[in-house]
Length: 224
Image (tube, rainbow, N blue to C red; front, side, top):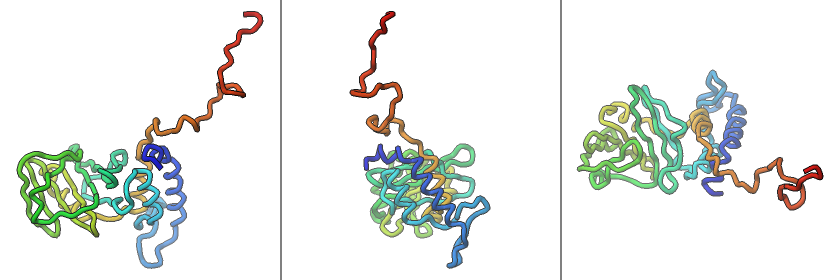
């Protein structure tokens, strides 16, 4: 399935997620989180739901991760594929500040940290020398006014990139990387914009075409 056609399936994927989430109304026998007061489970989303969402975005399922930071919320319309098959989503928060969460295949160590450019909130590279400091199992990276934390989880390189003004939020986000809950995933999918151009014109039913070869009837009646 092409990425454009996958994006056109957003409403269908939302419906599938909604059905699956509503069916999970019983408590987790293993002691995990049950449904929230809204009826949406706050347990981790199932592999099937994650795979459906990943296909919609054109990302690989193992990179569909998220995080949390006090005062910041994920922006569903800013979720999608990053690079070839990675995943990213922007978070918005206090005073209009934002940071970007991205997950791709790879690794980063203290030895090569300074050789990789820091990213800005849009995923672009920030110029200038990179300073790296190991901090609580993550690499704190700065370049000018940009700041980023990089962590590696099971072969996935996660980076939270923003401004040094949001230092505490970035550090918190780096420590809160997790598989999205059912509610988080459903919100991200539902907020994904559908590209109108992704609809195959050959599948559109038109009501203004006559039967037969489908050509419009432009004949004039006897009265002119």
